[in-house]
Image (cartoon, rainbow, N blue to C red; front, top):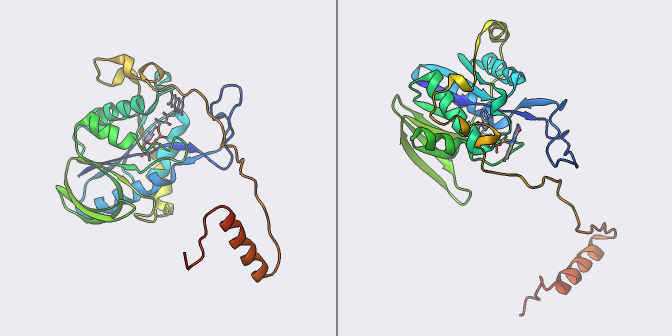
Length: 268
Ligand SMILES: Cc1cc2nc3c(=O)[nH]c(=O)nc-3n(C[C@H](O)[C@H](O)[C@H](O)COP(=O)(O)OP(=O)(O)OC[C@H]3O[C@@H](n4cnc5c(N)ncnc54)[C@H](O)[C@@H]3O)c2cc1C
């Protein structure tokens, strides 16, 4: 089975800042890492490869430095890597990102049977890219997969987390799935795989390598979304710290809840 994992390099969110003039994330010089959900997507692909055989491809759209996350995927055991890198891809919203990824997958892998994405990223966090790739490739998709029940050669049995309930589904390949972070704990790279990763080649594709009738669909030009403003949320709720004995605190809490009309005595 040809399995493709989409991986994104994201800023280390604890350290990212917003440029107050432009309202955009300050990405330059920010420390970066692989999107944590994508580590689980790679592990899922490796588990399926171990069950059915085949090849695990990893693909990322990003600047040259995104090659680093592809190398990390090689260290875990991925076989082939593709970097979609071109200044014309810059400024892409989720639609342009997924269009570019769909074309890149079609060009590099030809006959993908399974595409795996993370459920979401820790920066953009929309969770839109996976389903949009599936729509562009006209294949079914299953989101929020929390457990792989069975991997067969032409179908998967999956558990999906709908928050209020779990649902068991079967999906025929080719298909796309997006996975929860805890579907599988990602494996650590072995020494041998680290060495091998250094010598593996990454295929780099730009705009002119992708087959499309509409070159205006890439990057900022192909992005119908316009971000008006980006800002950290303002915490405007006053906070109080109460001290005292347990009884004092309980009485005070009841009195406050009654005042807020959130507490009714039992006989009401
Ligand atoms: C108008 C506009 C302009 C923007 N300009 C820029 C910009 O200049 N630079 C910039 O970095 N971002 C830019 N962004 C953000 C960019 O759109 C998102 O980073 C990108 O579309 C992915 O969306 P997301 O992070 O919400 O991914 P999600 O949909 O949350 O990701 C889900 C999964 O999709 C896959 N995936 C997502 N993105 C990629 C990727 N690039 N490569 C491989 N797999 C991927 C991963 O498996 C991931 O786990 C812009 C957004 C808008 C709206």
